[in-house]
Length: 196
Image (cartoon, rainbow, N blue to C red; front, side, top):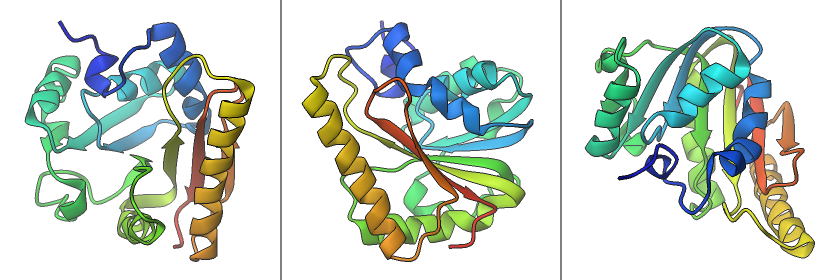
């Protein structure tokens, strides 16, 4: 049986490590509202953000995998129509899919393997989805291995910082970039009501 963490495409860690690696993301959620998770997997991170932030969040999510969307429907039985099987690369007809035109929070776990030019193009496409005063939260994850040497953690942090620097050089303006204070190799960049 697949656990909720494994269904989130995160393997070989337990809840304690999951919490340590991702809890800091909720610190960027400072008010209630709608949240769209692009590449939401089974929705477990959305459920965690609802709990960790202590804010009333109305969840929405898309993912390319219909099996994980089915899990979202079970995890959020009060709003199963808020989760759709859609490809992020073609996501733009959100209102046609019955989704709102914009959101208070848009969360995107930026793929490490994409070239910076593709990441920039995607950020440009996501900017209009953010409501006035809302936030585009761009997560960047290193590996999920719970035990790394200090040198490995520094190397992953350097690689994440380099990605954000490259995006800045391409004209992306971040309000802030926060690295996980618990030493794991995860970061979140924030663009307030995006201007890309």
